[in-house]
Structure formats: structure tokens, C-alpha cells
Amino acid sequence: NAGVMQNPRHLVRRRGQEARLRCSPMKGHSHVYWYRQLPEEGLKFMVYLQKENIIDESGMPKERFSAEFPKEGPSILRIQQVVRGDSAAYFCASSPLAGGDNEQFFGPGTRLTVL
Amino acid sequence: GENVEQHPSTLSVQEGDSAVIKCTYSDSASNYFPWYKQELGKRPQLIIDIRSNVGEKKDQRIAVTLNKTAKHFSLHITETQPEDSAVYFCAASRQAGTALIFGKGTTLSVSS
Image 1 (cartoon, chains in turn red, brown):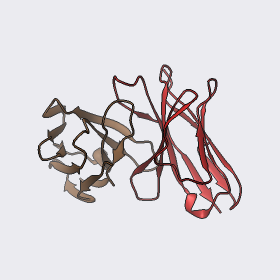
Image 2 (cartoon, chains in turn cyan, purple):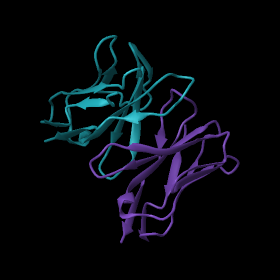
Image 3 (tube, rainbow over the protein chains, first blue to last red):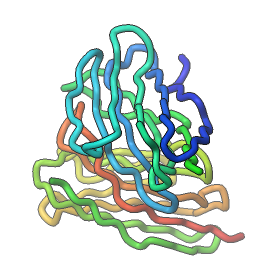
């Protein structure tokens, strides 16, 4: 059973470009969470999605950031017009079913560097 | 919303000693408390978790205790080894299918 997959592992963008980060949850998991980790800091919740639904986006910046989890394919975190402050590690996690086990399994992360 | 405080931010111990990391949370509705270990440049990995209907849980050298009244929980590592060196994060959440709110992490260094 493959774990949570994220790609790319490293992404370099210039200010003003767009960044697209992909996350494929573990097989059988229908819940995806995105977290951001700034250098030497903890993980901050951004958004929680199920297939075709955003359940909780209370941690997402109001502008430039969006997320989706389509019926087919990976979840995508999109950052438009990136700025240097967006440089961070972005982790996604997946879990099985709501109402049951809340154990979240993390992917390897995408390290975004904005030049 | 939930707020999780974690102490200490750094902890240095000698191999074989015990290490204790403490966290407090603010939301009395939180009922799930996992601990993650993150090595440099790697993903966070769950090492142990506890739910609010249990006061203590052990897994070999690792144990977690929970005091719901005081709203704090602790990670205990006994007989520490150099490979225990990493950043440890505590977290809290209300229920399955909700966001984890993390503490800021504790950098544990075990010297041989």
C-alpha cells in the first residue's frame, strides 16, 4: 500500500509565477489535509477537502491560494502570483473516514522556494 | 479556536536518560492527541496518539499521558537513543475528520 504521494518534491518559482502542488492520498483514504511549515516552525493547517468538496478552509489565506480535490486525480494546492513569503514546505496528509479513525498520514512534502 | 502550547522548545539529554515534552491545549472539546516525530527534511511520522477516554498509553519506550481536567498531555521517552534525535510535535483535534492543530515543536538532541 503506497503512502501519501506528493509532487514535485522541490519547486522553484520566481515572484509572480504560479505554483501547483499535487497530493495523492493513500489508497482507501478520502480525506485530504494541507499544512504549511515555515522554516523552524510547526505545521499550520490550511485546508481540508473530501472528493469534490472543500470542508474547512479556515487556514487558507484569502487571496492567491486555492485548493481542489477532483473526483478523479490528485488534490491540488494552487498558489498564484507567488511572493517570497510563500517559501515553505507544504505537506498534505490523508485519513480514512470521518467519524472513525482520525489518524493522519503525511506525504513527503513539497519544498517551495520563491526567488 | 484551538491553541496548542508546547514546551520545551529544545531538549538535550544523554543517551539512556528519559525525555519529557509537555503540551497544553485550550479547546475542551478536543479529544484526539497525536505526537509526530520529524527528522530533518523528512515527513512528520505518527509515533503515538491518545484519545480522551484514556489517561495513558504506552508503546515500548514511548508513553503519552493525558489530563483532561488540566487540558495537558505529555510525551515520555525512556532509555533515549541517538536515533531519537528529531523534532517532536504534539497536536490536538476535536474529532475525526478535522484539522490537527500543532504545537511549535521540540528539538530533542540525544548525545552518546
